[in-house]
Structures are given as C-alpha cells and as structure tokens.
Image (cartoon, rainbow, N blue to C red; front, side, top):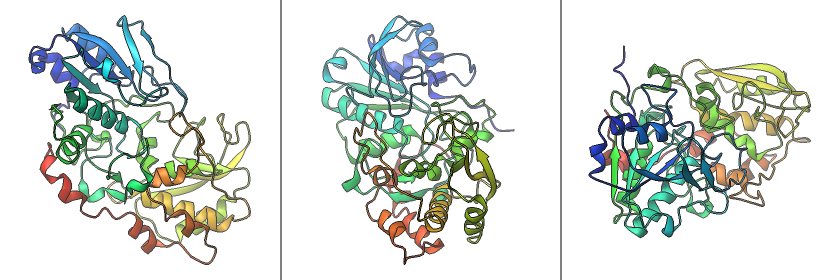
Length: 396
C-alpha cells in the first residue's frame, strides 16, 4: 500500500508556523481545493480554522466555486463561507493587481491541477508569481500531486513556441509536463523570476511513480468538465478538439473521453485510428447527445476512448492521431473553429494556443500529406525538458 498522501495544505494546517509569522495572508484557491485527510474540508476554511490569518481570496477560471462555464468571465465577489472578499483572476484581469498584494505578508496558492499546459490554473500561478515578484510579496505554493504522475519519460510536447504565447501557455513547457505546480514555480523562479520570494510546501507520501489512482484519494472535480480522473487522463490530447467543429463530450457523462458530431461515421474513424496500433488505449463506437454546444441537444456519432495501460499510453499522441483520422476521412465536414473566452475574446487561433505552435494546422489541412506515427512523434518530442527540470524536482 502507498504511504498516506498529504497535500501542502494539510501540512500547513498542521503547522501554521511554516508561514514564519505572517499576519496578513491572501489565498488563490477554489472549491476543488480540499484537504487530503478530509475531502469535505475546503482549504480556505481549514486554513482559517488552523489560525492562518487569511484576509483576501483570489479565484481562477471557473470562479471560487469551480463551476462557472468554461471560458466565462468571472466577477469579483464575496465568500459566504469565510466572510472574505474574492478577487477574480479570470475576466477583468488574469493577474493580481499590485494594490491587492502590497498589504499582504504572503500569497498562498492552493488549486488542484490536471498536469496539462493548456489548463489555465497553471497560468494563474504563473501570473501570480510575476505579480508577487514585482511587489516583493512572498508566494507560498501549497503543493499537490500531478494526477498524471511524475515520470518524465511520459512527458509529451509540443514544447510551447513563445510566438503562440497566451493564457493557455505563458512559458516554454510541454503540453503534458509531468511535474507539480510547486516544481513549475521553482523552475520559473530559476529561469524567469530570480527576484521572486518563493516557498513551496511539498506533499508528503507522494512519489513520481504515483498517478492519481495510486493515491487512494477521491477525485474532486477540478472544473465542470473534469468530473472524474478518467477525463483528466485523456485531456492532454482530446482538448485539441475544442478548436474544431466536434464535441468533446461536454454536457455528457464522459467529457474528454469521447468526441463526435452528427456527421461522423464512427466505424470509419475507428478503423483509421486502429491502423496505427496505438498502445494503451481502446476505442469504441458511440453515440451521445451533449447538453452543451456544439451540437447541444443533437445526436452525435463518434468514438469513446479508454486507457488500458496508463504507462504505455500517450494521450497527446492519441489525440493527434484521432484528429488526423477524423480530418482525413471527413474532409467535407471537418473544420477548425473559434473558441471565444474571457482570455481570447475573438476565439481566433485557438488550436495554435492549445498545441503551442503554428505549423501543425497546415499539415492537417494538406490533403496530400498523411499524418502518421512519425509526424506525431516529432510533434510530441520534449527536447531538453528533463534536463531543465532535474534541479527543481522535489519528489523521488
């Protein structure tokens, strides 16, 4: 049996002296942030109960409640549970303003992540770190496990091309990075914010070989379309379909585990995908009716994926090969789509923001060019990523 996993927030609740006498503290968090030892206990409530002097909360995309619609702007507000003001970091602003930090001794960050570059919570941390570096505010990351594990051999690119920098990717990291947010913050301190005052309170009992399913902990939905770990497992690749005219299963029982549209021929797609002999995944033909656009209320035909060997499966490669199978067999229907959000109001260039580079879409569009395993391996290469992060790894 694995050792009992404790999050950074559990450790701070047990020993508030880790804040070294801070008397005014802010917290970036949401309702998905719970204690490992008590899934019913929200971090902010537990921290106050332990004597941590919180005076202000900050909420990421989906708001403090973690249930606001994807991409929807969230307003400032008030938390009835703690009686604290809440400053939104997704809408009018995506980083804390200086006046909201200057009276704080420390800013805590405690939000569960899903280990994928284009999940915006990562960049809420990045922007908070940038703001804290400017104001001299100490940033304290209450670390949590990467649910996809920490085995760097499972990392998948593309590496972000800064020409396509956005709130889905602000720094050069892989699409599936295999490190914790505390480790990412330490890397950014080394590479970009040398003046930042950073403390990471690490997890206890977690090792790099452990995925979420090895932690013996319940999954708390990190956002509305991440209701269970199975969705997070496939998200690094299936998220790419959000830049197309297909449904990723939002508004069904299996978001990011199935894709489809009213015009998809499921059997043709499955056959095309299977010819690549992709490891670690099964594919089944399905139909589903999403309650969220695109195709809300319409029957969609498509495929559902299930990982059978998480160590062998490469979700980004799976997503790219499935995208190739659909775009190549349904050229008369398949199209790229805009995806307007509070951080990208026109929705233009969404695929480039997700994939992190600008030369991939043209390959899909070229009717004469077949996308095979070699092309996908080239796209998903991670370069010197393992070497860059070796000095900041906190877990064995």
